[in-house]
Image 1 (cartoon, rainbow, N blue to C red):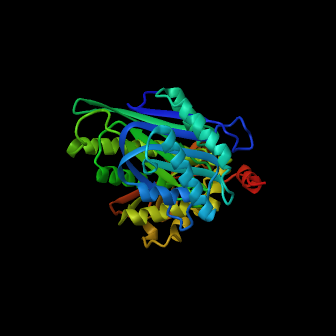
Image 2 (image 1 turned 90 degrees about the vertical axis):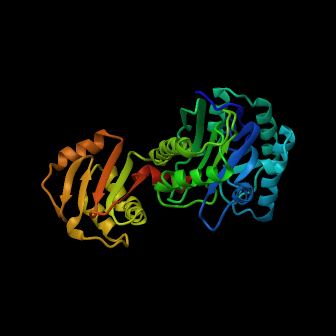
Image 3 (image 1 turned 180 degrees about the horizontal axis):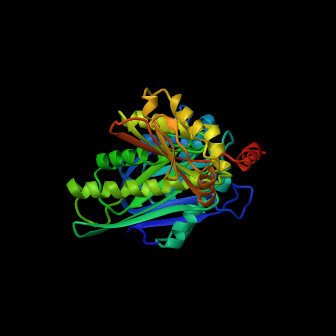
Length: 395
């Protein structure tokens, strides 16, 4: 993996998780001042690190992100805020920074205090292990995981104005995933030069097209955080004009790639479901319909059973609260037409079912009119394994 210039990464185990061998503290450090931008959960109940990071981003001089997994530091009151601040202070002291240059993320069990002695030792060990190599990046990407089956990483390279620019990103998330972010964390690093306002705008737009368009069960979490660090090590003035547009398109594609990995890794999932809604008057209406279809337990279980049940999909669109002409609705699943002009059409159910069974991804395409707006949403199916895992998660 090619990493952006002047970044270092580490991931270590300090015993927060039940399995002491699993990594649970990550550290990402920029050797130079970086523009930092952030997008966070829209839940009213938020974890202490989210409160802290919201106060510190966007900014022109962020240098580090410290992450712990296994404990969310959420619903922990004043002590939780003190612990988040202590994590940033320790990281700052070890790296020769000010506390305000450090962002903090936590993920895991809600309502339990952080084991600060363990975290203190973990941050110290991570500082000692920092390296600009792919091994450090992979260790960090492992250290932010909870119920994930494995790391979620993505990268992009591009050349703009003679400058070679790299983006490298890591994310985590498998459950408590709902639109408007979820129990997910993402850290994107780049050596591009960006203005503070541009970085925040681009990150929010990318989130709206990616992480705000995924769900597993629709549960918006308390800790969702997505940050972008751009340290300008590639050289030159902050990107502008056409170059900034190309960078934005690259960032959005990277975020979509990462975001799709989360529902694909949904706890117990056997299918990734892509829902495309077309023909709406506005993007907001298209997203509302897509979200409603995605969160239907009947749609999700139909996909689990490889059942091309058009009735569940069409009826879910119908109660989404968006006005459309029912006689204009059309539906395809994996390219097979099941419903056209507001009525079912003849199709070979066994063939469509086989298509769903043979492919990890099921593509649902729903047209509800002739309007110009469309939206994409990704979710997972609903299996017995999901119910079993989440009934036993805390105990």
